[in-house]
Length: 161
Image 1 (cartoon, rainbow, N blue to C red):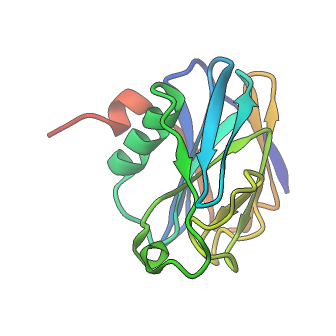
Image 2 (cartoon, rainbow, N blue to C red; image 1 turned 90 degrees about the vertical axis):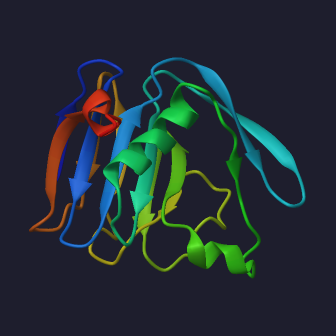
């Protein structure tokens, strides 16, 4: 099943939620260079206003923390760090980020180890979902049954107690 989800403004994101995990996805909002740091090199890719920034939480967790991470990349252009496949820290990453025009969720990759921005580690329940940028919207395809998608405002996600 493929559905188109309109995003009204830069403060609105999609929450793709399963029973045990979730994903937040929002628009970049403006054109900017996103630097990607690996142990061997640094390279930058240009994000366009309609490109997607997605934060995956394969084990669930705090939507507030995931929203903060999304905003650090979108608003403050914090670079993404890619760990080598054998790095022990990858097991402790609760949230991972990907950005680009198309993002595919995959549960068989190691968290934080893929510099290719079209791939994002996910839980098994969200694996296979694809996000594709559209003008003012995000198209989600291969959405399994039982997975909810709804719009949330980042100011609601980021509100502090």
